[in-house]
Length: 419
Image (cartoon, rainbow, N blue to C red; front, side, top):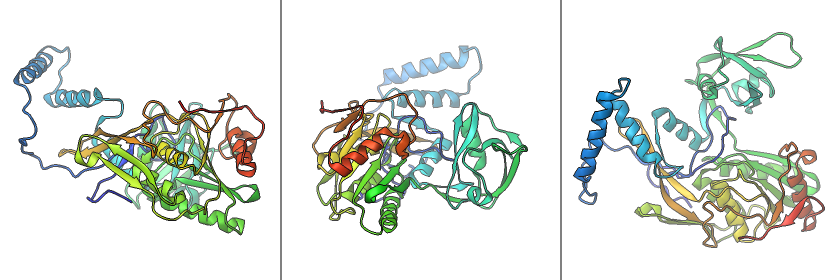
């Protein structure tokens, strides 16, 4: 199923939106990581030399800035800025990555990092604990969802820089970190001294609904997502005491992640057929991936929940299941991110994230900048939505109606036509 054959090579799909949730930055792209080149790479005969007039123009501008800019700027800063601008000017998804940003991508791809195991978010001007991750130092010590993080190692958190808070909770396995929190109902601040450990971020959450219907939410796509999904389905069947009668698969606000994970998740529910294909100029930018025999639900109905925050890898799954008639899509039109990025490590620790392919759903459609229209379009409402909670999740209630009855019940809905 995987086309990856070299070490340190991962294929991702660019995520969109801002996820301040995990104690690591979540999914950035469908990217392929290559090995770093040697310090001095020989010029190949295939690559044309830079036109001398353009090179002279660049040198001319560089010299003017070096001599005349109001503040002194080093040559290294100027060259770095030139590279950053060159890559950023290509498209919104290509980027020049600093070493720390490159590390974030590698963490995102594996779904594992060294830290304390807290999902955090900036809410109402404070850093809140969304949830302590199961079986991590934070959970074992008694950190609770809703706690407000005030300080790390006695240094107050900067609510303007959530990344700094996240970074300070990470560190080498076995090292200690002190976290100070405020908790509703507690008059005094609480302090937890935690020993950092290897933390696995489970990208799949599950719940058994009524009538043998399973609910699975995938928050992002990492290397372990397919295995996490398979375990979740097995446990739901065990809780049900019988095979699941149907499944609601929630991909709302899932910004993307590893391409192979999207293919793997699709393959869990498909017996055969094309899942995704891609086309680009480089040899390895042209590929196709197909399903292998075996449907974990043995044909049981699936409703896939999507919205405008469902992007990239999420759209690969939604597109494959829709095109094969395997699932009913419910919600809003997806984001429309249909390109593949390759992450290329550079010799000095930096990397470039470069758009190298466009991908296509099994029907041959490109969803880039158009998204995927759901089978049942649900008009967005301003009321609070709590994903997975029937009382506060209109789309999930509608999905349950579709799964039970084969058609939507009453609600603010209209049938969607693909355009």
